[in-house]
Image (cartoon, rainbow, N blue to C red; front, side):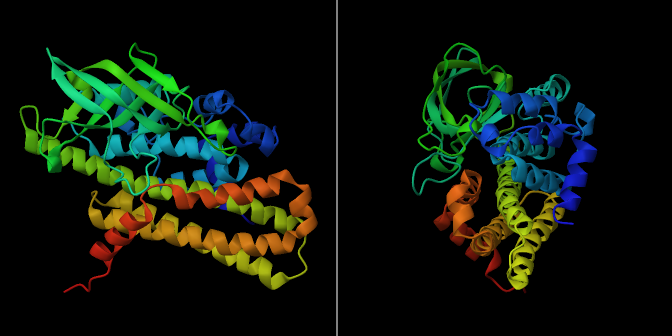
Length: 379
C-alpha cells in the first residue's frame, strides 16, 4: 500500500500525531499561525525523537526519521518543515558536538524531558549566500558574549523555546571566524522577533526574523573556532556539527516535500486516473526517491560526518526534487483540469512541493560540492 511503511513508523513511534492532523483539513492546518502546529510538535511529535538515549531521548534512527517526515509532509507540509528544523538540530548536536559547547548536553536533556522546541538559525535569505556565513556576530565581554545581528527566515521563531544559531567571530581570520550559539531562552531580553515571511504558503511555519540586540550569552552556550583552551578541538567539533547538520537537513527537508508530492499522488490514485501507466510511473518516481533517502540516511547514521556524506545527501536531495517534478506533472494530468481549478488543496500541494528547490544548499554550492567530492574516479 502507498505510504504504508511511513504510516506504520509514525503510528509506532509518534502515536496520536497522525490522528490529530487528520482531524483537520489540510488547509485548516496550513492556515494556522504556527501556534497549533508547535503544540502538536510538543504533544505528539516528541521533541526528544533524535536526542541521544543517554540524554533522555528516543535516539530514533535516521531511516525512521526520513519515513516520519514523509508521512507528516503528506498530512501537513508546514509541520514537516518545522520538525525538520528541530530534528536536524537535535540530531547533529547529539551525534557530532562534543564538550566544546559546554551546555549542550544539559540543554538536550531539557529538550527531551520538558518537550522544548528548537529553532535553527543558519542560512540567510540572500541569493548565492554560503549556508555557513552568518550576519550574527559574537564579541567577548567580561566573561560572557554579546550577540548582535539577525537571521531570516527562522522557522518557528515566534514559538520556539531554544535555538542553535551560527555566529561569526569578527576578530578571527576568515577561515576560522565561525562559531555556534545556544539560546536557552528564546523569550530573554534583547531577543526580538520581527515579521518577515513574504509568501502565502507555509505561513504556519512561523518563519520570521530573529534579531539579537546586545543579547548576553554565557560562555557555556558559545563555542568559537579561535577561542577557549583547545581551539583546534573546538574547530573540529564545530565542523563536524556543521557537516552532520547539513547532511541530515538535506534528507529531512527532502522527505518533507516528498510527502507533499505523495499526498498529491494519493489524490490522483483516489480519482482513478484512466491511464494506469501514468499511475505506476508516479509510484516509480516517488518510491525510488523514498528509498534513496532511506539509503542515504543509513549511511549518515553509520558513519562519521564528512564532506562526502554532505555531497551524497545533496545529490539525493537533487534527485528527489527531480522525481517530485515528474510525479507532479503526471498526477496533475491524472487529476484533470477541473479538479485542479476546483480544489485549493491540489493547487497548494503542487506549489508547496516545489519549495524543495529553494532550501540551502544553493544550486551553485550543490554543483561545486558534488563535482569536488563525487565526480572524481577513485584510485
